[in-house]
Amino acid sequence: MTRFPRPARRLAAPAAAVVAIFAAAALGLAPASSQNPDVELNVRPGLMKKINIAVPDFTLVSGTDPQNWAKRLPEITAADLAFTSLFSVVSGTPTLPQGGADALKPRLQEFAANGALQALQGLLAVRGDRFEVEMRLYDLTSPEFNLIGSKKLVAHVSEPRRAAHKIADEVVLLVTGERGVADTKMAFASTRSGVKELYLMDYDGAGAAPMTANKSINMSPTWSPDSRSLAFTSYMNGYPFLYRIFPFERRPVHLLAGYAGINSSPAWSPDGHTVALTLSKDGNPEIYLLTVTTGDFRRLTTHAAIDTEPTWSPTGRELAFVSDRSGPAQIFVMDAEGTNVRRVTSKGFNTQPRWSPKGDTIAFTSRQGNHDIWAVGPDGSNLRRLTAGSGDNESASWSPNGRHLVFQSSRLGGTQLVTMLADGSEPQVLTGGPGQASSPAWSPRLP
Image 1 (cartoon, rainbow, N blue to C red):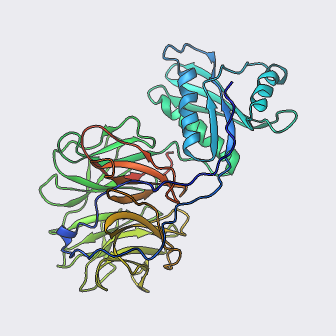
Image 2: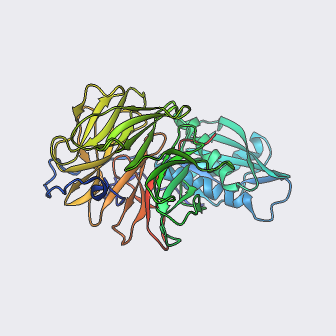
Image 3: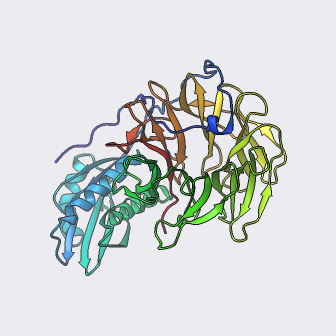
């Protein structure tokens, strides 16, 4: 059996990723001159001690398994656990026996002797059109190899990978008290068909499929809090109107805003009742609030400068946004009523703010030479740079638990999607192949 490695000190490499920026041409913002960053690169997480976990093949207890999901599901679960950066995983070992503690003990002892602290057992039943998996997580640090927890999970046979993702999220819940993010989706724009359409894929880049096919320009997808729909801007009717699409339901695309001029940068409020967006219907790009059920609009900003790209705090009491009211574009914060406006950043040309799920950080894109992802506290404190190196890194989106970011990057040549931990470490490329991928949006956890 493979032994687990000893924990090692890891110096995080600067994460690469890129995506489109503040529509300067469309909104008329002048480029800012390159400036030197005023803080040092801050992507060193230091010593990271991970939990060694064994994930052997699952046991088929009922039905037939011609596609060998008893082996493939644990491989996916193992990759999910490794992605969290919380676990060091060994998988691909023979299945655990079905019997009780006495039958399990020799194998669990073997795992423990090779450095595992936990072991995951999966019992797979294939029943008609669904997978049923009972997962059991064992503590190998206790003399009796106590059961940490167990749960039965169900997924349709058309979504076999989802069963594996659910298992990984349950393991993370048992270990940390917070469910993982493997059972989520990524929406993004791609030119793989020759025009910029919207696509949907698993959080790990698997199973990309088109959501739109209007042979137009589609961009800036943004998830509703219930993960049922996305707001996005499209030129499908010749103008940049704002629409709503329902990727998991057979419902038509719904028009949210179709005024003359700009209808862009949608952001759902945490309660899902309101969309903040940018409209130029009154002559100047300003931030408005749209009540989704009634279609009523309320204007939040009134300024001679450009105000755009709103993002909600997780409490729903504040919004961050971009404005050039003080010169080059900077990040500002205001109350949800449009009052108490205060500036958060001061250097560079800063756009694309994204408020973290925990509320303590705003990620944004800064142009100080190249475009890179930076982070700052909502009060302007703890400014730090998360990406560096060749190419541009833009348009970040947070994972539901705030541990990761996905963004677009051109450092590999062409624009693709990359994930990284919130400190900028452990970059992983999600997309590849033909076309450019941009504007990623990480979904909430799926129901």
